[in-house]
Length: 270
Image (tube, rainbow, N blue to C red; front, side, top):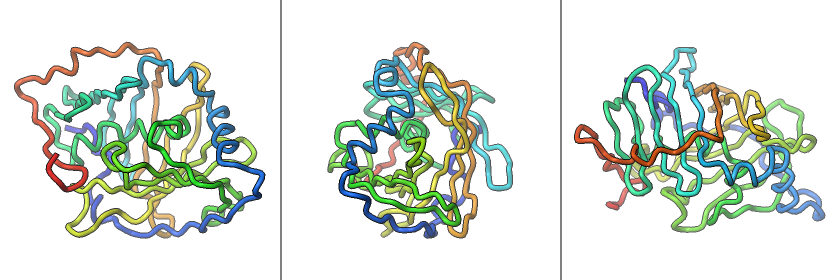
């Protein structure tokens, strides 16, 4: 089964620090609201994204060697954020019904609950900055390795009780000329993915490889995740975007052969 082997073998072992320049403050007249509003507008604005019935795409993950880890059709209901992930190569799937995650014939290494909204989040960050419970820090400036671009940075954190893992953060790197989101630094705090006693991974950096316009919205065609010394951790291509697919609530009915994900994001019983 190839569905959602997206974090690849060795996820928990790949806890290495990524070297990116620390953000510097920007001029006082440039507010967080200005920066984020310009980013959202550069990606097509809020209305079309918010009013879409679903966000849907096919993602294909690759190991650093270039070996494909499988393709998945991801369909997420806007609003309630229920999700169905269907493997392209076979009939296996993951479902998040808003309360629990379950799977059928899933053999991936990461918990289905973690996987269900992972790429939805990675690929929709400009709009997700407007979610309830999101805290946006003051804008800064920073470069990435030997890239001379001084990106505008905004740190995205979460109020306690927001989502499964409110201790996650995203440091957004925004192109100062196009206002597009170039990528982000992030950590993972999902307890079941971490060694005992470790509360989060060191930072990883995700950089988008390109964009395409779909229904007036500018969305990624792929991304690369990097570790220390520019080491590639994983690549992902994204295709067949749609913001008009209907959501089928009957897919939320759990079949008898399903396996419920009993992992806990916090390490404590739900």
